[in-house]
Length: 403
Image (cartoon, rainbow, N blue to C red; front, side, top):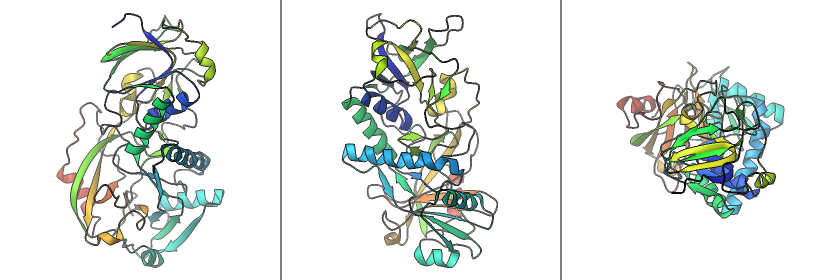
């Protein structure tokens, strides 16, 4: 391999939900972009996979998310149109809970402030309209007409495909080992993968959040759980899996996972077509960033981190502690399968009296079983050593909720 580092305008570390989207939008604007992913593209080692991720317009976390969500819906549809295949399904969504429940009151606040289409139902009416559920008498149900699900693996693969069509270069199975901020020689920082070394310019002083992202500590964008005192379908567990997740990791904004997978940018400015003049040769751009991987060395004017659960390993000076948790998901086979397919069953969140939740999805045509999980953060974990095998306690956490 040549000792001269290959130069780009922007390097994106992590090509998952946010990274693939970033590569696509940059390449579409004419930016010379390199995406580095230590696993496959897409893969099942992070927090976006699982065949379905919830998207909601009546956001119970805070009404301020609604304008971002409206934009995200438009971007998902743009992606589907350009690909020529679906990546999002609008199913409607039920937000259920007892009086004072956060999931219910927060959703009501969002629909009232933004005039969102919805229905507010008592338990009897909700069960009449949605016979998949058994709901306690004192629960209320908000029906969010625009809630639905994103197909995350298809979305990531689609963004990656389109990014390459627009000229992006994507490297799978290439681990970043170190990176160095060449604009701050007194305090070198470096990112290396198992494949190479890469560089980018950092004109801003501190690492900043990507456009349209919010406080990392916010508990928003997370695939919220739904559960209740008594709920859901007659079923038996058929398959279970576990995923790493930074709390707040629902895929919901223009192909980017929210909060837990914040892309951190090693530059305070936005990359655009003008960056083409900044890195016109295959030489390291003085004042830029150099990235080393397990396969090579690269330089760029800007560096974007979309490392998900591995972010704190990539950016040790971020100054924001990230807690990675193990989030099991379950798929169950209903006794009345005709009630639960996509097109009949909405996505849903049910809050219990103790404040915990379960959430779930309809059966997808190409994946058997009703998907459900809890919203609990569970125990802290390390992305490198996470136990991804299902445990009896994982099954118990969802089985009690089923009838």
